[in-house]
Image (tube, rainbow, N blue to C red; front, side):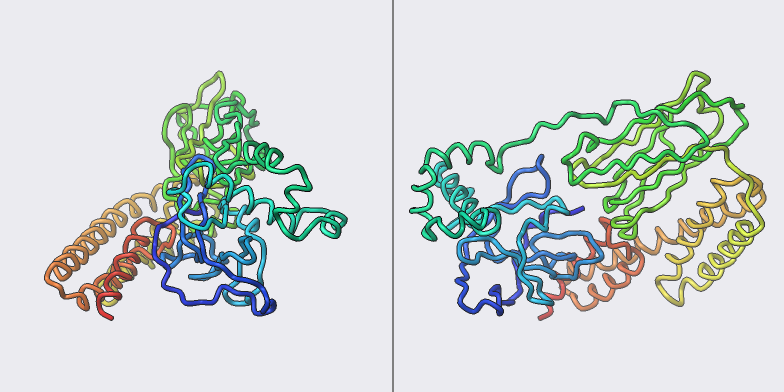
Amino acid sequence: MSKIVKLSVASNLSTHNPSSPNAEVNLGWALVRTNQKSKFTALRLPIAIGSTVDSDIIINAPTLRPVSKIVASQNGTLVMTDVQTLVVSETSGLDLFGVEIYGPFASNPLLMPGHKRQLEWMLATERKAFKIKYPSFFKKYLPKNQLRRLALLGGSAFFAFGALAFSPDTVQQIPDLSKELIAVKSGDVVELSIKTPAGLSAYAGGVTLSLDPTPHAKEDHYVLSLAMSGLDVEKEFSIYFNSKLIGITPADLKCSDSICNLDYPVSGDLLDAAGDTVTLTHASPGSSYVLKSVFFRNMVPANSEEIEIVKQLLAASARFYEDKELLIQNIRLAKEALAEAEGIVTTRTGLADLEEKLVIAKRQVTDVFKSKAKDLQTRCEMNMQLGRNKEALVLIDDLVKLYPNQASSQYNTLIKIRKSLQEKLK
């Protein structure tokens, strides 16, 4: 759900805890990564955490503000301060997002000799453990001075062993169960509740389901329903039915922290009399997700309410398409209305007459959308080359209206360009 982005922090927010005026606040460095398979990145403290490119660590979660948390060194230990409430907490709260932060280090740890980096990491780990993990009895009687405390507990040999066991470079060996078959019964909602915390799971690579034999005919139609969350990456999952690609998952912040129900049509000619295999291939093993349940069933006829909804969506799309020149986002709204209508038409029977209208409307809207986006992009690039940053910024704002999904690569690229233009205009 998150990724590290190397950016300079423009924030001048104080990193001290107002409630603890005597606390000593230091600068320094930290090692950061967002999953156990990626390499560590060295970032200078303080580190800003938020939901936009203004932060050092970007977490695609709607609960986070543009700059939400500040990680800094306090009394030789990393702590995290909420920008709005100024409440100080432990950095272990970032585990939920799969973010690991180790430190503090006096200088860039990636440029340090290995033994010095390991020693500083051990000392910082022990200071943190003494603060939050040691029993109250030990806190009461052990020396407050770290060097004396280490000597009393056994000296450097003990912590050398601890560094070997708990070094952030140690990779936990987890079995890969993404290809192991999970039995699923057709016609029933099967609760799976598979959770992968940022790559630390046997199902980080995906899930493979085995469907029991289903009596069928080639002209039959079926629907595969998946209840999932954590879908904050474009094309995060590819869904295959007997090795045939039947769909991909969209990137949507609404499906990041909440469960979304996704329906994929399956034609009868894909089914096998001996049983079927559904494969969910995870393209981003380092991104966490939840697969709550799966439901494979016969496609049912559309009811009167669904038919009316499709008709209204087609009519709304036509209105937006006709008024596309009034507001730049009208063509996007037309496209979104057709996508919602398509979700019903492709997963219900009895809508053949509306399906033809949908195909024609979708082709028209898609062509105009691509043409509009290409025109804005071309004009924006031309203005940027000519140094007309103000005019280019206006066009970037129009492009953002076409790609408002904050989880999409187009949106994030446009936001980076917009920030660069805004800096030039200061």
